[in-house]
Amino acid sequence: MFTTVLIANRGEIALRVARTCRELGLRVVAVYSTEDRDAAVVDLADEAVCIGPGPARASYLNMSAILEAARRTGADAVHPGYGFLSEVPDFAEACEACGITFVGPPAAVIERLGDKAAARAAMAAAGLPMLPGSDGPVQCPDLAAQVASRIGYPVIVKAVAGGGGRGMQVVREPADLVRQFREVKSAAQSLFGDDRLYLERYLPAARHVEVQILCDQYGNGVYLGLRDCSAQRRRQKIIEETPAPGLSPELARQMGEAALRGALATGYVGAGTFEFLVDHDGGFHFMEVNCRIQVEHPVTELTHGIDLVREQLLIAAGERLTLRQEDLAPRGAAMECRVNAEDPSRDFVPAPGRLAELRLPAGPFVRVDTDAYPGGRVSPAYDPLLAKVVVWAPDRPQALLRMRRALGEFHAAGPGLATNRDFLLAVLDHPQFIEGTHDTSLVAGITCGAARGLTEEASIG
Image 1 (cartoon, helix red, strand yellow):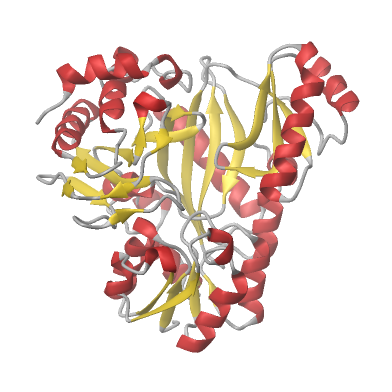
Image 2 (cartoon, rainbow, N blue to C red):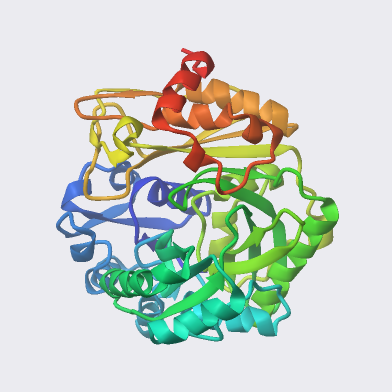
């Protein structure tokens, strides 16, 4: 077992990882930018190292600075969290070259599954159901037009290196294909340094459902239920829950087994998530693999009673997976809402600022993952995630009631600061969400004005 873990991340996930490391008796090294010198994880860590100025490219994406911090502090493992360098194969390979354990899949696996076209080919070979699409990257608009004509409109053009809802565009009419293909190609080069694209048939009304998996270095693996992530704004998840409402146990089993089959076929090691689209006929289609811990991992932890970060660390240390599929018995329902520092009344523009006031929800079966504190600051330099409010209950209706109550207790205020709390409450109150019949089109139909009106009735306190 390694002894010192450097957490190559910031915010709530850095604090989350640090706490599990402490429980395992591991020494914790935090890295921080000049923007984050007052971050909560800096105080909690055994040692903290400044790795550069505020912009992520000069700090949290600076591989050399992070590896030098590991060398200076004697860290023999690096946990990348999510985002930043968590799915960069060069970083995983550099850690390995320096004799540092990377808490995640091997670099070769990250590279293969991070290339969306290669991942699609690998999963098709493993027998996972796929949406009609291109066989590998499409180089030019003319070839894209041929593929689109074959699979039928609407199509979605995606960056091979894309992720997080970026680097994709839905094309609904043939007349728009050339222009939108070129726009995505340019954006992909700017965002990812890789302008390769591929095409898939687009499902305008589908559910986004994902499967959590854990695999060790010895070919053992399990899947830990399904999470529904269909409540999205501009393809960014805002509400996640487990179990996925309305899916039959048989369909859930098929999806779980398919995800695990795909993971084992590609030599996956660690925690990961297989993402699928589920159509209204109950068919499911592979979308992508996330080779890291997910933002929404707490809902799986609450229903399974398993610390996923702990499992990540033990697997990375070379231990065999002790969980067996037949022993996993999830209980109840869990739901997570992402409270962001953004202003719904101004088209969700980021609204960071000083937290002059902060009151977090509590009570039975309520968990809040955040590194925010009264007097702290939400930086404009990074993602506007302020807190993840997570609840558990014996069933979904009770979880929904508990989430409404918890969000009603959430209060954050300060100069320039705004949050999406009221918008989240509006989504929770939408009839389709209450019934569990919503899909990825739900949030787009809830306007800011409607959100304010609904929230006046829904808000508690």
